[in-house]
Image 1: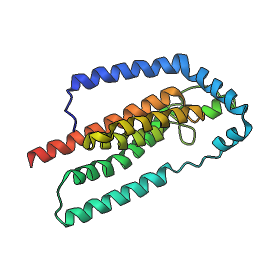
Image 2: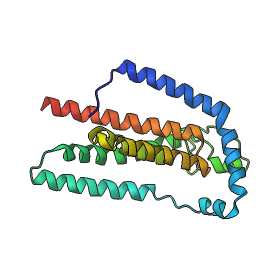
Image 3: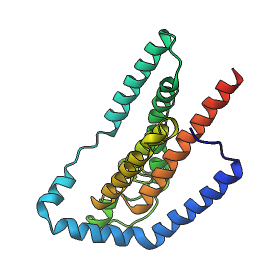
Image 4: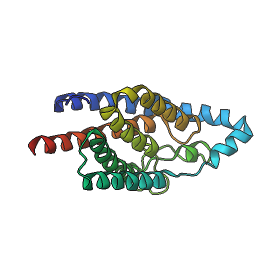
Length: 210
């Protein structure tokens, strides 16, 4: 389990993350994306493979949500109340919540997709509320998997290191295949953290009152 943090703590952390994200947007995103694309283009087969990776996120979220809620409802019917039930409830809630919020924010920010920037020479900008089909900020994969990872982090501390390593590898892979800018990954990771933390906090308050 983790401890609760005050509103001031989250405000300060959010300010720091915002500064890091803005710094990345201004100084690093374009440079890293161009370097990565040059590297990918020098390995034609690898470049082709990375271009054809299907986006299965909506299917993974749907399947994971259905499976976890089904297990939760079955165990609830059997009147089983343990740590696993709390994890299932949190994880099954945070997956669709994270997915829907990433859709909203990608639409809201409407940021030029990485490959449109490096391959189609489209300007790198935020086209507010015009992000359908091109929005990449924040990274949806990073948001969803971080949200799920934080649920594991909260209830199963002995898995924290594998969770952290997996998320770091995922973030690096998203950047290394030019599917996302660095700031997309940072924003997605932070969004995933706060989604799960505040859902957990809400569930915990409800449980404490009952």
